[in-house]
Amino acid sequence: MKTIWRIEDLTGQGMYTSNTPVADLDLLYGKQHPGPTVDHALGYTNKEDQTTYRFGFATLTQYRAWVNTKSIRASLASGHFRLIKYRVPDQYFSKSAFQAIFKWSNAEKVLWRAPNYCDKGGDTCEHGY
Image (cartoon, rainbow, N blue to C red; front, side, top):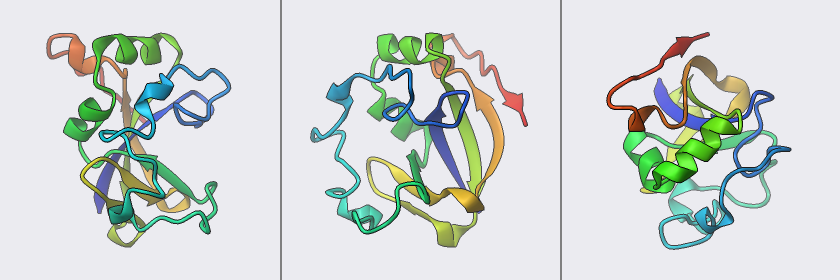
């Protein structure tokens, strides 16, 4: 089993697709934030259904490198987003140096944290499902 971390709103939408988008679009398509179709290590192409696969991070270090300022993490937290920890079977998971992809229907939510938990001086604020 693999672990993946994903930013979601209360309806399960990601930080770029939510009805209340908070993520700064500067977090997309730069050297540090490649889109999934150009991040070849993921093995993702436009042919795949975006409702089948979701994107996140293989580690919390990857998450903090992508969502790389306290102000963005605070905006996500105030925008009712959560940092969700999923478990997913190995065969439904792929990662690159920047992000991870997983087959959503085969994943299990384990816990959630506030997106800015790492800025609170060690307060993990973990909540189970």
